[in-house]
Image (cartoon, rainbow, N blue to C red; front, top):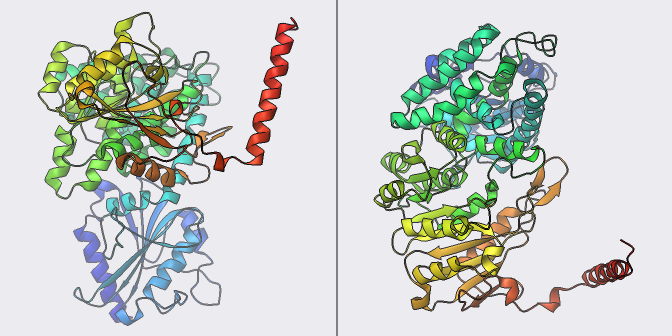
Length: 625
């Protein structure tokens, strides 16, 4: 037992070195062989390591107010010979076995990191880390981003971040956030009567306000009639800390100022006083603090603001494009980064940034490949460039960056056709462009055609840089002067036909175009790779929209990227063609059908569709409709 205390002291000292006991900074709670958390006590009440069935506790239980659903437990043994058993089923005698034993009980309601530590000296200390996603009964070895097992005690934030990379944890996190976004939409719409375009601003503004420690600790005690002023003041204080010009801060603050004086967020009225006596605004902030704030601290790969924007968009009355943008699905933003093969040397530009989804995805891919802290700082400070014209969308994008401490200095609120802004961006020498241009503009105004946005992006890039855009399918098949202009100055490297319901519930069919900037297609005479990417494996569901229900997207994604990079040609999947501005730029126009893949069911389905088509047309001709 005395030697075990030595091991516990080694762990305690290591935790102290890593800042676990610095409560002023991170609100971490370390409990030793006990817990004041009622749910933890209940779960461990039958976690005895012997057969008597009494309760038991690991040496250390670590929790944090950052995310009350995440725990780290440590079990210690003095001898490295007692580190782990062959079958991991002897919790009394082995460190790893004991840690897994306790974690398995706690995983019913928590995501748990189980840490087994053995050895009585620093030099011989052995550490193994395992992960239990919430609801699981089997442990996974904790891996870093490169897939290597973690064999040391690391910081709380590192444990939390690495847990987030696990697919099961990420899926649970995503499902929880979707469920809450629906709940929050209902609350904001029925009780606060906030407009559609202001709902995501209410969320992003609250998240920024919660960054302010004073507001975080005091908002629950404030009178209802003081809360709006305190909310706006907290946002202003956090914006003042941001390393961005004052003009941009003022532009960001304006949309939040409008929300801060919204009458329905003030004192409780007759409709809400009984249900929410402290006011509906306090209820909204409390729920966001509890359900969303934990995602901000460490889950930096997760576009929380964009997620809420996308979910709120689904509930927009009438025209689903009413909020002014067709939001890029998260997995497509990820696909862009893989197509472009972004890395620490990349400098990524999005001239229609929206909520910043492309920039956030690119940033995460770049950071994963970064080796030094200097590289990471350079990526955040210098290698993300965005333009967004809509002031409210700009506020959302900038808040997205501020919540991560990244990239906001190079985010501009302006038209992407503003010469002064474009000239300043060209000086930054971006070498990758990503774009989802506005789709809802008038087609009678030639200056606003989607392909002119593509051309503007490409004109900003360095010679030979890659520009990727997702645009309506009409851009690839309908004649337009912009097609001639693009090919005159840039090379069309590839076009991929995307799933028809990719942007559900918005009914727009799209394709991805990949261009090589400032290398005239007419001179290169290069063949264009056309891919038929109609099936991404996502399934349309009643409450969650299109989701990767069967976990097939990673496999499909990796194959798509591989065959594109290698310019492979496969029947029914891809083709290489020389195209001109007058041709169709889609695989469907050139691919040979692979009849070997057609089944009896496929044949019967198409015959039925044809019969229905004939009947409908005969009825129409007879005047029945």
